[in-house]
Amino acid sequence: MNRTGRHGYRGYIGSRPVLGNRTPQHVQNLVIRDYAQRHGLTYKLSATEYAMPACYMMLHQVLEELPMLEGMIAFSLFMLPRRAERRLAVYRRVLDAGASLHTALEGFALHGEGDIDRLERIWLVQSQQLPTLQIP
Amino acid sequence: MIDPEFLTAEERALSERFIAQGYLIAPVENRASLDRIRAHVAAAACEMLGITPMPKDGGKDGSSGDGIGALLDGIHGHVDPERLNALRLSVIGAMAAAPWFRAAYFSLARQALSAVIGNELAMQRRVNLSIQLPGDAESLLPVHADVWSGDSPFEAVLWVPLVDCYGTKAMYLLPPVPNAHLSDRLHQFAERGAEDIYRSIEPDIEWMTVPYGHYLLFNQNLAHGNRVNREPETRWSMNCRFKGVFTPYADKKLGEFFEPITLRAMSRLGMDYRLPGGFDE
Image (cartoon, rainbow over all chains, first blue to last red; front, side, top):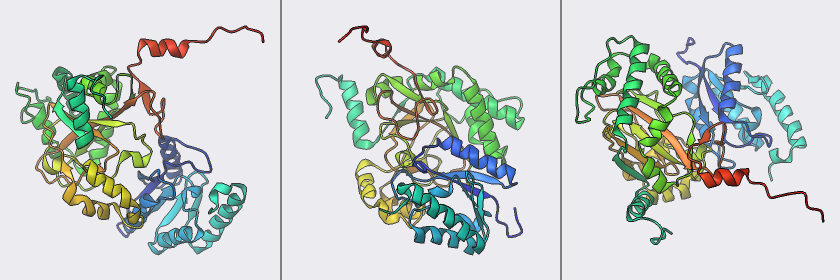
């Protein structure tokens, strides 16, 4: 537990394909656990995003929980909303809550404003390669 | 939809009740297996918590207020919420390590599963265990339907308590008609939490009263969940998913999550069959 009484990092996995690939939920959890272990973070049981396309209800729930957490660990950066404004709002909520956002598959972390640009650059380049990441 | 010419009266009644209510609650079909499962679970819990000797079941009436049932009901006197997950994982490990366990679990509702799902079944590879201590807010399952999280809509859940479950010690289910209304407006909760959904359905939910010795078989496409257990006893319940082995799979796949358990002779023969080859055009 840190000095503010907040404890642990909530995992965030999905039931929809990421970048067109399906990763079994238990494998997503393994990747997150491994990331947490290697970075000395306390992993808390994952929330599983729903299967409905464009639904981010579980992400919203994790964001609501952030004041009690040190942060969250998503399986992949590319599980975040496709719409840039929504992604930026996620980053903003994480930082405003004094928390951090980690993406286990890619090994990225959002700790401050400076990290937003890096994540977004990667997202935008990837979306050029993969039209499914673009907004129709 | 249910052809009366081909189903027995009992199958028809079960099917119609399952569709109308979304669940069945009935005495287990194999009480000896349930008692064996409960004794195994209790022994694993006692070993992990260092409780010796393990109490014995003295009651013949199947009440959980005796022996092993009393131990499980009162486990919150032996474990705090911080150690609860370690206990749960330890007991789940013992359940998975017993080679007879899944067949025994299946035998608890074999006929009902056959009537509601079919007689060629796939079963979840690991039977899950929930332990819900009185007042513990950390082990909650907010309102959800399994199908929302990647389960196939063809799955049903066999939920079996190891103690008497009633009130908030049990789980709740949203009946089919209000569930259809929720489904229509679920998107309106996109920026709100599960608690908002719960509040909107609270007047319609049905709490499942399931005494020890009974099973609950329910349609996991219906919203369900639990709340803080406000009863003075701990809830112990197991759950496991079943589906027709040849029905469509979603994110929970055959092999990694499900395993065929009752393939019939003609299906085996059919899967092995190859048309004679070697002909030239």
